[in-house]
Amino acid sequence: MNRRDKNNIIRRQRLQKEQNKRGILAKIRKVFYVILFVCIMLYGFRWYFYHKLLNGFGKQTSGVIINEKNWWGKKRYPKSRTFTYSYKFTVDGKVYKEDSKQNKHEIGEKVEVEYLDFYPSISRIKD
Image 1 (cartoon, helix red, strand yellow):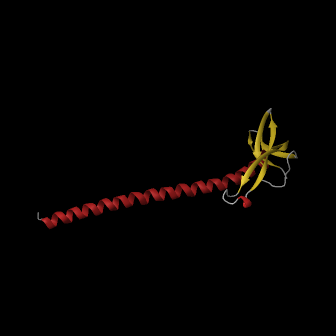
Image 2 (cartoon, helix red, strand yellow):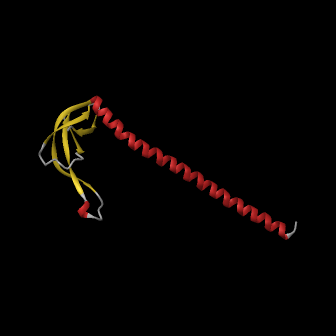
């Protein structure tokens, strides 16, 4: 075996190693994108099922708006930031707090709350 053949073998080995690295990175990238897509879909379906469950199995109770702010918007631009107040309600002696997600409420205002009897942390203000 002469020197030229050895150099060709070494080049082929290096090329094969680079292709293997690229192949592994491509597979990791594909898996990442599939996981990202599934997470986005589950997040979207979460809201759909959340409202379906509350519409079908929701129970009502009274709650009150409390002075706990939930900020929305970017911290860099304070003028564009808005907030909503939280509300609290009681089920079986246990107090639950959630974000009202609406700007129209004032502190101390009484609201009707819809919640799931088997999991009261899932709740919303009934309009």
